[in-house]
Length: 441
Ligand code: ADP
Ligand code: MG
Image 1 (cartoon, rainbow, N blue to C red):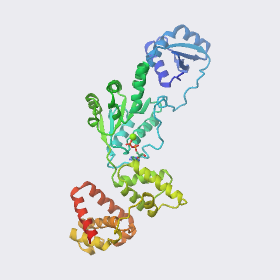
Image 2 (cartoon, rainbow, N blue to C red):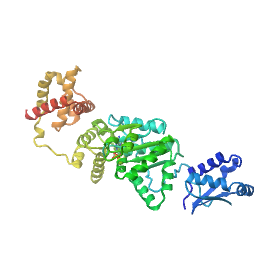
Image 3 (cartoon, rainbow, N blue to C red):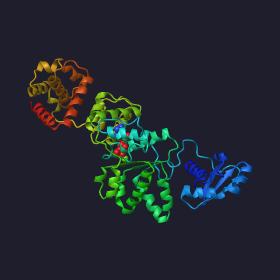
Image 4 (cartoon, rainbow, N blue to C red):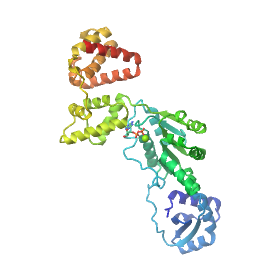
């Protein structure tokens, strides 16, 4: 027995009003559909006169409308009384709750999504699509490798749309579910229902669409689903691990359609973004981390945000084992297994300053002074960066060496150099050379 969704019932009423305006009445809105069972839909009517009117004039129009709205051969009749099935509560989204449809995680919202240079475009287009589904970019295609926040972003879009329009018919699922349901529908001879389900939505969101490429028939089916929704200006949002043209054995016509709207790539997060994600995730767990610990984790774990999350969980666990003691750098190093490089302590700040002063053509006194000339400022930041890498000094101690600056200035210097290093190959080579020289000094 399927409870009839609000959406389908709304469509039945609209169909009757559109095709049989002569018999439609204002009070139709008060009718209560019962469940759809064995091809039979019973509509409950509280008022005797209304029941008589419906039974006499409306059986055929409602049956036709029911068939049009469900895509099934059903018949509609009328009965006195109230519907035995309670109506879905407000805000309940029937399609979201359907079998195989994924639940949205309350953690995966826009508020919890950190925006950085790596995901700016994907984020902005996600926001735009949430504000005007079907009107800005269609489809929106987000790609990036594993753990970079695609699922998080897709769910954030779904939740924003449902907040703004709670009755949107939104179907959010993994590609795997789409494929499985298609195969099942073929086996059961229930393609009609399958198509109805996928083609009568306002928004279709499919995660990891690269799994579509496995079968020709599934691609064919999705092609038609796509076309139908696209023509109706319904929003389609897809994610994948690579851009459309790089998905192996994806048919050309799908590749071209996936490129019709906006294709947004998510890159691995840079140091600053990793730090912001760590802070966000820790706050979500009700914890604050000192800056040097955040920097330590972000420098150690670079692959993706999922690994960051794993590291935080370990850290959390270690802190709990040690009687919930505040997390400091020592604890973080223990939790994440800091490899203590041999001879690490032997690099002195003095050696770093000597090498940098030589490499940049500045004076030692300038490195330790407060002048802000560009070359000097850069050399000073390189010193901070190397001191961070090659010594065990704390941020505050490093700041002390370089003109009495506080730990945030040191942190900022460290970021600036890290980003420059990642963005500029020539700079990186020069930095590596200086670092090597400092180790040797
Ligand atoms: P993907 O689907 O791309 O493999 P997920 O969306 O599952 O990646 O993200 C993996 C983890 O990293 C999740 O816990 C997610 O919340 C987190 N994450 C990824 N990117 C961000 C971000 N920009 N801001 C906050 N958390 C993020
Ligand atoms: Mg994912």
